[in-house]
Length: 384
Image 1 (cartoon, helix red, strand yellow):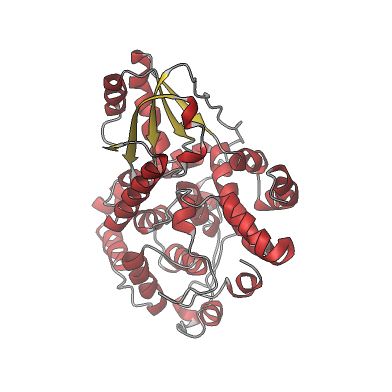
Image 2 (cartoon, rainbow, N blue to C red):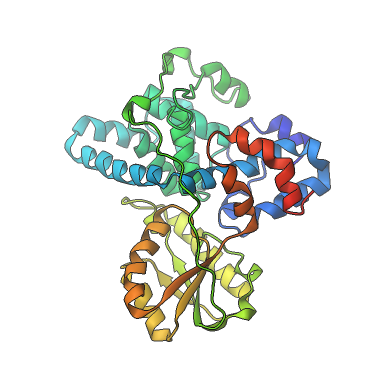
């Protein structure tokens, strides 16, 4: 988390050799380990100056989540655009052939095909490799960016709707408008320590942003979604999701708990099949989270949204309480479920963490605006 991270974090050493990065992302994504915990550990071990790069990368996760919360239309646009891209696969034989070749790791470009193999087998890719991969997919292969984002989202153990969607948009020049990321042969050779040596001619050299796909520009910034606080007087059902697996942090003892359930939802990531290891990781995380509460939890799968109302009604509760669920496929599902909860007089209450509340108000433009606030945020959160 200190100088070693700062000096070596850009090097992709390959499967089983990622020694200069933390590999905590699947756990941070589900808050099996919390952002404030790893920042506190970094500060204690290295101090702010030496841990600065690591801490900034942790803040990027909060920035992306907050940015998508402030512009939820971006998620809706991705979701609807992906449906259109998938429909195009059915009608465009050439496109389907090219996408299938890329997803099979049969493109003929050694570095790209190796990253496909690592992603599919391990559920992980080094961050620098993710950038190269996305740039090659979009600009060298000319494939729709949302199909590439979907491929990542279906396989990454740390797949997150905000980080994944906005990172692909950033590479495409849609997040920071008109500033796409270009994969360069020399850069790949240098930061893979010579494992790969693509030719310049293998990669697109004239890279232009994709902002023409969204001529209307970015949607306006919206206020952060308000949440309904739990009512201690109501009989309550606790819902545990992969969005926050440290539910024991919240005041469970203050609630009149009548039922507890874990909700599997990773299959909602895509209309296409999500990798089995993603679902397996989610199930283990949910089981671990439930065990740490000391409460007996029933397993539930996010199927028809009205099943949530059936479960809550059978339990005789007046509210369902869960840690905050941000913008993404599970939020979409819960919004649909709320329509069935309301007629039964059941409310959906949430807890939002101080970490999110401290970062999200600043997540309205580029990361620099959040970066400037990091020292003050650390003080606000009692970390510095």
